[in-house]
Image (cartoon, rainbow, N blue to C red):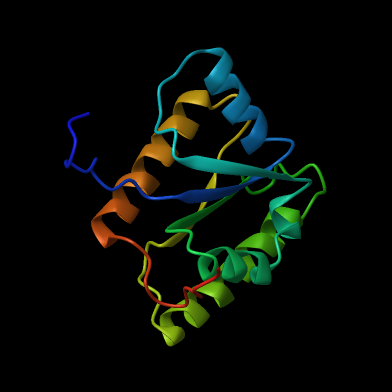
Length: 145
């Protein structure tokens, strides 16, 4: 890269992935060498229903540009109803984020099964593009350091 030229901005994303489906889908995407943006940091959780809203708010507070929570398809949850719990939490979180001024699309939710490696790559690409359009996170970000 030439001196004095900055590289284009790339968003920082955090993904909370269900161990049984979405994380396995991500693993299959990697093993299958399916290309998707590499600007995500993954946190594996036992179930998408176990993702606390405070984890998402804390990630945004620390300067993450976007968050994705992904779990099993409805009816396929390893813990029977965890993904239904996640869906209810996400509905509440969406209204909270709107109230505090966080742009729609900065936090997203999806269903990806263990066999959907291509779907996982599509979701990551879509979320990255959506967050790129929004630009760097400015609201709720706490200056640390």
